[in-house]
Length: 429
Image 1 (cartoon, helix red, strand yellow):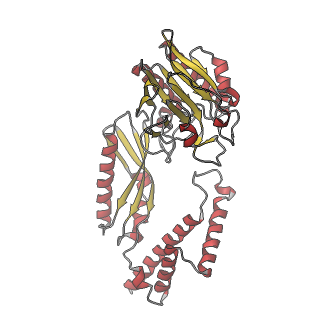
Image 2 (cartoon, helix red, strand yellow):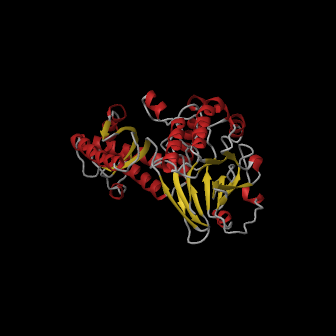
Image 3 (cartoon, helix red, strand yellow):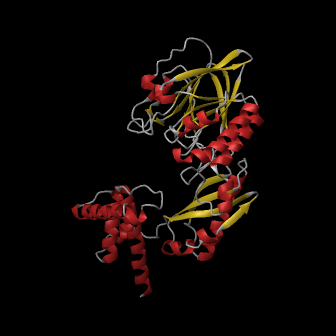
């Protein structure tokens, strides 16, 4: 007999999606509301069980905020005869056990407390149909693979699912590093992982399937694409199917717009409207209860407008809003990666200021820098890091610290814009 599972992870009850300008929408799109939607979908799909692969609650300071929604959802699942199996992650290693102990239900099973592997069986009508192995975070950091302490032996034909919150193929991770090889060497039906917020599924011809369901509610611009729980159907020891269910009402999307053929402000506006309209139509037709799209646009191409694009795009974050069907979109960020219509090789043959700057840009692009340019790159990188780590900016932004390639890219970008300005001044004389 088959077993139907609704699998999810990284719900982070207590958080709300970022880049949503309307406070009321932010509350409507909260991770607690997503948990309610997951519960309702589980009942609608008539699944046998729900699995939660860690980080169900955002942090231990969310205890009271998370207890009510989590308890209500678990009670609703239990009333429908649906069991829930969970492990704790690095965010909720402390708070999830406390909530479980506080709310109490014989339909909710927290496996692997204190970092010790634990197994149980899902039984229907007196017959075991599925074995579940689970391991929970005992602290917020775990530097070694949880599979090092795996001692279970599997000697029958019962399908087996593993629940684990871990960082896959990141050997130096502080969050329970595991490798694909370790997972695939265990004779399981499927691994259901937590920690990585982007959904990923690996199904090899042999060995267990490995799934990161991802965060069901998209929460920030790093979590692009469709998000929601996954419907798993286990038909036998080595027979399993998995399909995503789009439930997130918020989507973070990226769009590249090539401006190579645009020469005027009017052409820029028209082209941007056309490109965003096509992109949003595709997203709106992708299914699910989607309501809001936060869009990041990357402007590219060699164009006469290169030096003017920043001015053209500056009002977009405040003024741009489009609705396609039930989906409303706003622009969160515009990145200008256009290039001027300049032949650097030809210009570099000259010995005037534009020619010298062209030579410098070619060196930066080729990454073959002399001592003088290496010093420039080093000094620029140090200055960027000083600004990044300045206390005045400590509480804003979620960007990563700039590395040397990022500094090189910034120098190329600013040098190119300077060259475009120099040439424009020469033409105007």
